[in-house]
Image 1 (cartoon, rainbow, N blue to C red):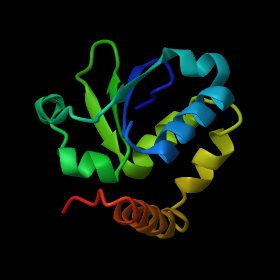
Image 2 (tube, rainbow, N blue to C red):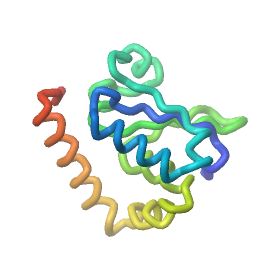
Image 3 (cartoon, one colour):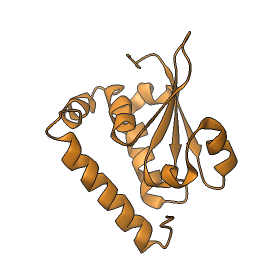
Image 4 (cartoon, rainbow, N blue to C red):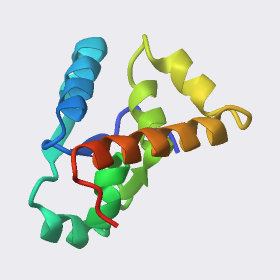
Amino acid sequence: MEHNNAKICVYFDGACPSCIKDRDSYLRLAGKAGQDIEWLDITHKNDELIALGINPKKAVKELHISIESSGQSTQILSELDAYIVLMRRTTLLRPLAWLIALPIIRPALSNLYHWLVTRRLTKTGRLVE
């Protein structure tokens, strides 16, 4: 499914300074392509996340996005799938999205991603099991 013209909402951890920095960096790199993306801070929004079918504990540990395409139901993607969709929307990040999606790269990057997030949450005392 192609997501280039779909409406995307990114659920990000607004209590995380590095997450805010990542969002701002993405918006700078995306330029006009980033204007069509909605960013929703998930802090204290557990009921909204549950209504969308997103586990609030998992939402803090993995990036989640919702994709609305005309004529199709809303799709929720997380972790690297979410990053790949976002990166494919920007010219500068499209090659990186291709690289991340490679079967040889993806598992190792996924493990690194989870390790870094767990480390960040542990250091800030926000790790929720």
